[in-house]
Every structure is written in structure tokens, then in C-alpha cells.
Image (cartoon, rainbow, N blue to C red):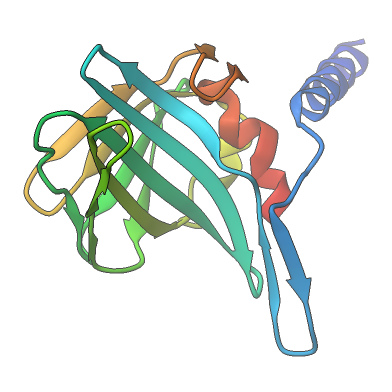
Length: 190
């Protein structure tokens, strides 16, 4: 009886995780004799919208020749000056999961945010875009457990963001579910 109950619980857990996963969509997908590349659409993870400034964190997932990457983007808009952020090879993103584990992704390169000016709206805009490697340990946990907190280590400082269950974004016109991002989409780049 205990075995039947245990098998039933495991089967129910598998069905629940499978039902939560979203259908995979790709911004682009290329497969040739020597190249395999696919990228999921950008997904809003964090939004801060004040009167004179806005900040967005966006994720997408990439599979390049069998290696999965996290594409991290930090987009900032403000009427005031926006200080630059940089990543180097020692930079990392640490994701705290609901089960208490921390999964750390390492930076794939060195880059600093680019400053642009929007003449129409008179905004300074900074964009930081970088790629991060997934570790082998913790990869399976990302597919099972929601993310509760993210710590981003830049070259000179770090920032923490609490992951919300849901973001109703006026800017991106939709509902986003950051804490379940990896549960829903990591299977798309395996």
C-alpha cells in the first residue's frame, strides 16, 4: 500500500511540473551542419517604474551548440545621469531557490552598459547585456523550484532583487511570472 501511495505521489508531482512548463517559443532557431543555436524571447523578471526613472531586468535562454546560457539584460531609463554597471569574468548571478539552495551562474565575458540618449522623450538610456553559464549542479533544481531572490555581482557592487509571483506590466503589456521562469522555460534549451 505504501509503494502504491508513493508511486501515486511521484506521478502526481511529475504531472504538476509538466503541466506548469510552457510551450517553447523562439526568437530565432538555426540549425546547420556545424551550428545549432536557439533563443527564447525576452521575459520580464523585474520592473521598477518611478516618475522620472525606470528599470527593467529581462531574461532569455540560449542554447548554443548544446550549451545552455542565460541572457541577462538590465535596461534603465532616466531623465538624470545613470551610472554604468560592468561585468567581468568574475561576475556572477546567484539564484536562491524556494528549497533553500543557491544556484550560481558565471559570467561568460566582460562588458559594460552602453549609454544612449532618446531625443524624443529626453531620456538617458543604459543597456547592459551579458551571458551566463549554467552550472551542472543545481540545473535540475532550477527546473523544479521557484526562484525567490537573485543577487547580481557586478565588477564594483552587487544588487539584490526579490522575485515576485506575478508582475502586471503596463510597459510590456502583459502578465509575467518571474519566480517560475526557469520551471516554465529551462526545458526549451536543453
